[in-house]
Length: 114
Length: 112
Image: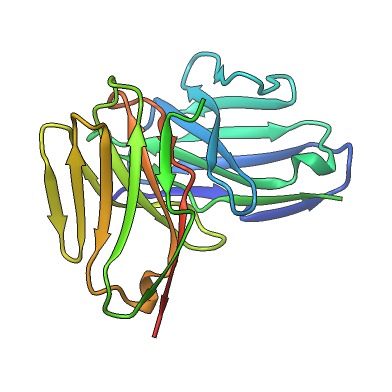
């Protein structure tokens, strides 16, 4: 199957700083990518849909100014957590559908805000 | 609103036994129902998927049963192995490039 990578795999930052997470489709192009958030022992909750060449679509309750999404190319989407606080600590996962419309998930990024 | 309900929350099965996880959905616009397997600290991986025009799909030890009229579907893992111990999520989607709505997850433990 297709491969989606994320970088970094884990990051620890101080409260108030910004953190950027990258999501790449390695062997296919993706005009759409999705960003999910997962708390321990919980399900994945969709945060936003990243669209290449246009603004991201955010789910209800997700602060667009706090979670900045940029779909820079057909293989790269970035999620920037701005002014991070301890409550932003979570497991962030991206996904992308390939040309067969099957979605592939990245390995996730563990964010810890101190 | 929880659009995909999943049960049980956790499941312990003996090695060689059958693991059964059930899901129910509300949105009749869903047209694709994947199951994902997730190991701790990893992203979900597609296990098997089904479309509503099919009542059953089998791939190796994994089988999906689908009941369109009841809006329910289930995953059966035959001959469960300790390596199957993971969290399983049912999910649903309305179209090819649309977002995936996940169930609440089932933590499966297969004991020797």
